[in-house]
Image (cartoon, rainbow, N blue to C red):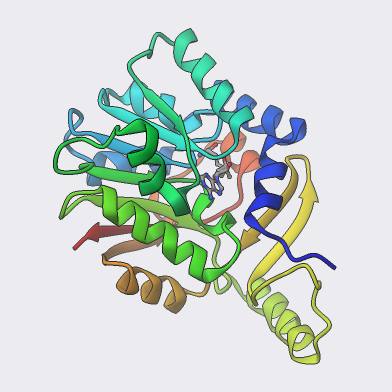
Length: 259
Ligand SMILES: C[S@@+](CC[C@H](N)C(=O)[O-])C[C@H]1O[C@@H](n2cnc3c(N)ncnc32)[C@H](O)[C@@H]1O
């Protein structure tokens, strides 16, 4: 059976089911309360150049614009989602937002070949919200993404991202203990690459997700030039509306700073 690759994820995000799901969220949900709280705390300069990775249909991008951030650059590798983000920006009179298509693991290549959108001295901050980083199959590829974001940001720049959490609750821990036994017996889903991977289907279409342990993220940040500063579960940051909870599971926020 074929292993899940970046191409699988790219196809899944361009699928009409995923496009409708993320476009609806961009139009009707916008930023979560927890995102708004942490963005206000860690990105105090609304004029600084910010980079949003994995912007999808623009849910967070347009949310940032509505909060008053005016120097925004956003990219995604899924062309269909990006088209939706561009349309929404026109509809909301946010034409100054710069969008481009790129794979985050090859970001510097995309920047230097055609776009050259990087501001002098690098971006003042970066965001990779709603678990996008964890939708990159293979730990080395996720580290590559972190290295590429490091390369386009200036020293001290904050990076805000989220992950699911294998250790979040007793129920999760029990589930992953069973999954560990399956891996020990070699009986895991043969399409998966690493322990912690999931590939499932729901209302958003097919989804690949890597669920890390806490130590894994701390090691990946340290290995890629990011200094860990903060992490918290979403429920510890803010109380979310029913619409947000229906749209998205609980997750862990991480804030790191470029060294
Ligand atoms: C869960 S969606 C979140 C979309 C949007 N940020 C939101 O919150 O609605 C994750 C996004 O990451 C993007 N993504 C995944 N892997 C990527 C990669 N290697 N390069 C660029 N974008 C990627 C997907 O196309 C998708 O739009």
